[in-house]
Amino acid sequence: MRKTVLLPFLAVATFGHAQVFTSGLETWQGDTLPTDWFGVKTNLEYDSIAQVSANVHGGSFAVQLINRENNTRRFSTQPLSVDSAQSYDVSFWVRGSGEVRVSMFDGRQENSGYAATGPYTTVNGDTWTQVTGSVVCDHTNPAGEFIIYVRNTLAPGDVVVDDVNISAGVVEPPVEASIYQIQFTTDQGGASTYNGNVVITGGIVTGVDTIGADAYFLQAGTGPWSGIYVYDQAHTVAIGDSVTLTAAVDEFSNATTELINVSGFAIVSSGNALPAPQPLNTSNATEEQWEGVLAIIANAQCSGLPDQYNEWGITQPSGPYLVDDLMYAYTPTLGTNYDITGCIHYANSAWKIEPRFAADVVLATGIGETIFNNATIGPNPATDLLRISTGLPDGTRVDLLLTDATGRTVRTGRINGSTVLDVHELSSGPYHLTLRTDKGTKSFAVQVH
Image (cartoon, rainbow, N blue to C red; front, side, top):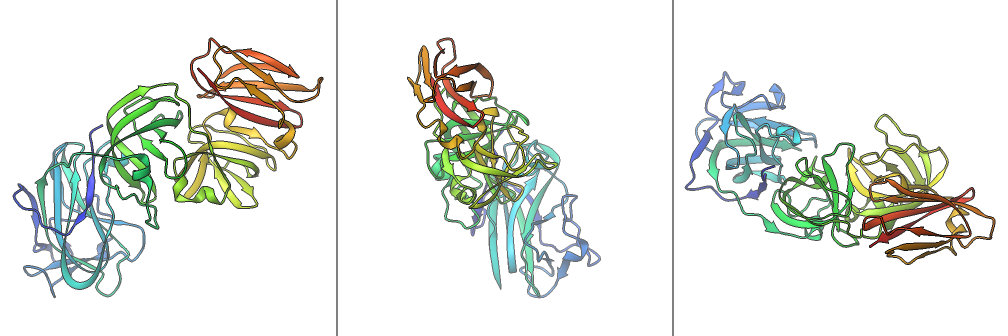
């Protein structure tokens, strides 16, 4: 996919670029709607758009936009011809009270045809202020529309817009940024400081959406701010791949930091060791710093069976949480305790852990937490042989399951005390070894070289 970026608003004018569209809001259908606005992508109601004739910026009229709710509303131009890979600078004057930002619709494949959006600019006062945003077209379209988003306006003035100018701009080159730099933020809403910018970054693939086949999780190192969600319909990856890519940083639905419009993609190596899952509980797993990070929530009780979206509830003393099926669907037993490994994700206004395969959801009981405390697994990493000792008395039957990073079962068996697995024919990479008795289950991370 081509690069797409919405740069942050700048309080500067645009000079020296070809004019694409200009509107002084002077021509109206009666006094109801400006004739060069209210395109089909507008979702402001008729009665939320009003003609203004007092304290205009230029000419005789301006437009008042009313949206006193926190959810965003669009005010779009009539159709305009737009060209792929072309940058456009959208400049307008605004006063009143509310929040505004710009974008465009060009019919691109992702995000329902809309460009990524940058942060809102807050307007507060009757003095006219010029605001400029830039957006890059991803899809040539004879019927594109440029959009002013508006929300949280306040009576009586709400937001008033005048003298809109759109001109051809210049695409900014991508900047190098680590996942930590992209994710780290002090913004209370969790927005990245790179939101709208095109970046060059990289990491290890820790999870792949095998159901939708259009996204994966990328992580560089361990700890807070080390993971991110990548929406990518153009490239195929596997868990353990080390990749570099160029992509736009986007705050999807103003909530989820993600990378979109991936280009400059390369798989550097495959079969790499994954970062150790970060131990979390149902409380701190809601913190922004863990978004996109591979984690484990241990000994959590199933408090709700899968709903129509295949989400099911878990609970700990720290509170409730959700398990989702973005990468793997599991049917739990109500009241049963589980150890759940997966990538932390925020979607549809909720925090969730996303298991990747069967070995990511295992039984956990009070006994099961300690029953394999004396088990030994080694050498780890293993080259030819993997020796397993359960640490349990002779005669205790233990079932074993070895799965690869995709969840595929590669070895099964039953142990009475100890055994040796031949792993020399297995591909290099991460594996999960699960030991199970009728009294408990425990999983171990195993690396094969």
